[in-house]
View 1: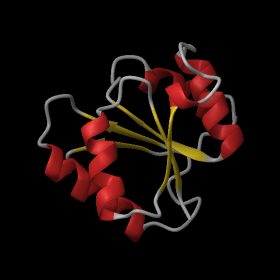
View 2: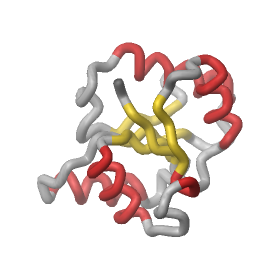
View 3: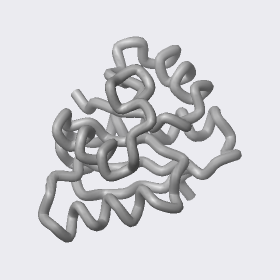
View 4: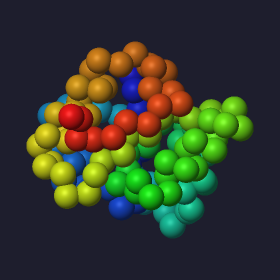
Length: 117
């Protein structure tokens, strides 16, 4: 099963919608771990250690740090970047589709931008 980590500033409405649609989805929030307040490289390292795909709205810096991990051949289980202000329902559908259509490990070293075109 694909596991998710929601970045500290990730929209809780999306998280609640995902859980409402898929109650067994394995998703945790950064603020519910020891990572609360941690910088982006630390969050990505923890996500890699726990094999969790990061959900974020932070397209400004997470992308750079994720590609740095890939360039250094460090584990990077994947990032799903959601444009702030996107329609919540559409984002929930896109995330669920990605999860349902992907094998465990298939999103590694990938960055997806939502909503999908």
